[in-house]
Length: 602
Image (cartoon, rainbow, N blue to C red; front, side, top):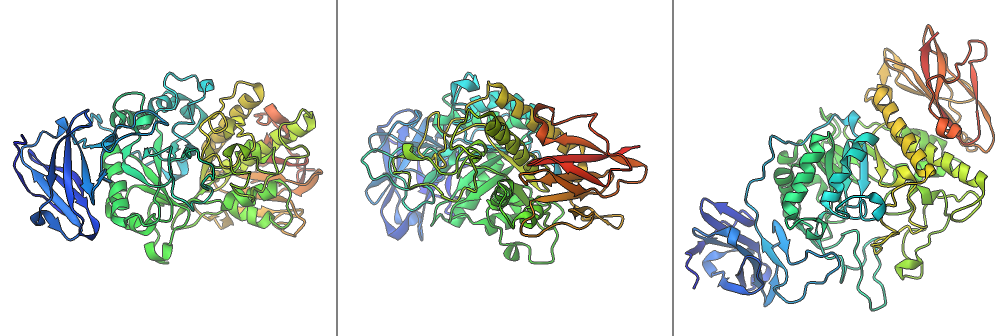
């Protein structure tokens, strides 16, 4: 017998909310369908009671019910609408799907839970780091630690990520972006028509490894938890990241027809209840403008592939903090084409390296989950997605990659040395470019997906990061760590202004100082950074050595080479060559090499 009094609830607050000792259940129900609330004793899949929403509890397409003096912590719930058992899209937690890859069976297998209890944040707040200090590391919450080479106690979980925080901190990372961490169906049907996610025509279930499509956006994924409590485990991760000076950015992929109200409520929920620092919104249903203009998200970083600034700020407004970030493949395509020696892209590449909009910031990367890893972009010219079961027809054919003479791994030392040098070049350009550098998880150690550029259905060693144990991978790790330290030590690589005491903060140079060579056949550029210190980056992507002009060093200084990507493990040197006054007007750059020079007192 149900002993709690029932009355009309609050239709303006979706989901489950508490009002003193009372609990309100509010849900959207379209087309006037019948709707009822199903309650379960906690941990059981047998309904304890089913309460219909009366006409007095209906407000247009919203049903709202209040249960007086209701012990919410002892119950789970679902709704029945139009004869179907459905879950609450605003649910704090989804129970009944603890095991990755398992398919819940029965109409009551999945149940919703509300989590109104307070978490001991111990003074934690979003970090709000200065934008010039942001370095982003992007990874999959399961694939980051799932492989045994990660050597964590809790692979594939939030707890496993927490074990890797010392690694991220030592590397120099200040922001961690995780692909979808909310509850989704990794097996079974996926909406058709998604970019790079074709339906398989054979009878097997699809593995939705990435987590895109329909989902429960408010609830952390239970299979990503090593404990019985994904809510607390994820909050533990956030708190520990913040304690180590690392922000957490979460990706949300909102499919077409997602309610803008739900999407905004969702992001508010994660910022308020989980203290996340920012979101990367993707999908055709992402209400980017609404999120950017929401005053409750005024301190939250909003990342999107497109920012309609004319609808957000207009043309005149200049924000004090650039919390909006453009996040797309523009940098990736132009830099990869320049690295492989394409004609006519040097100006586009130089513009990408120095792009610094006034109203928003940019995220720069040379690899991501939608395409080749960096290592594979230097090993493969064709995608190799046969393992996906699509006849290699899925995935993008525009990878801007180069195999340098051999498709796949090579035992030719010269080929492998060139690939290693190009990896250093790509990462150096990404990290030293104006904006926020983003490293795709594993690229800093040469991780490969065996030429698969669309691992949406690969939950195995193909998609999982293979943590480096060989000297080549470890050497690349050390290089990345040094480049990130170089970026921290030299503010010129992170500046926002455009002029310094009448001198351009950034200028281009070619065979003559102060004149960039932007002809169609040019594959070289010199970039001078002026400020409290002078830095000169000389880039040559020709297949032969090249003489490049060097602008005059500041008064009383001479140029010293501090980075030479052609030197392998010795790329960084505190005692690098110093250009003499007699011969220092030009510098010879080896093929496919980048030099970084700093002004040093003579």
